[in-house]
Amino acid sequence: MEVVSRYHPNSIKHALRITIGILLLTMLVGMALIPAASAQEELTASEKPSEWEQGLIDALNSNTKSLPTDDVVLNYCEANKDKVSILKNNTASDKSNLRTY
Image (cartoon, rainbow, N blue to C red; front, side, top):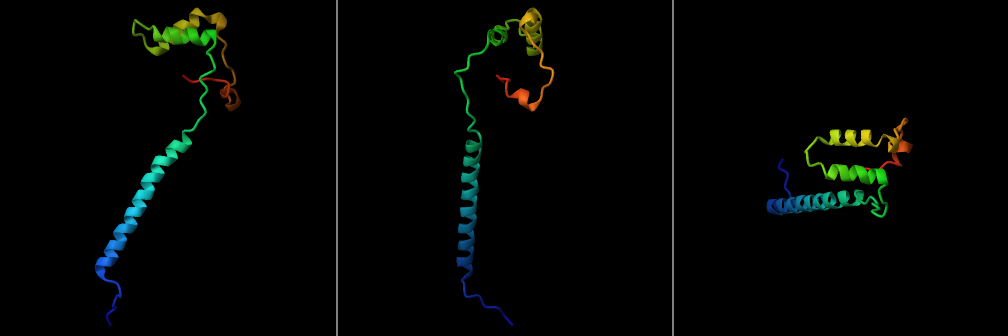
């Protein structure tokens, strides 16, 4: 017994191409929008760095001897021991007070 399709083979191929095209287009649009939505982190540039932070930034920017970054930070911290405080419990709640540059 032979099964007879009421659709022409070319129309099935055409519908499959359209379906795949729509799926790919949806994926492309989704890939473009999802990173943009998740990257909407509020950045405030109005907060000025403290005197100590600004000094460290200046030391890193004026590294004319091409020292490794770790050495520049270590040298700056040793020179400014009176201004440096060490965080003892670095928990998630403490991290909210830290800034990343």
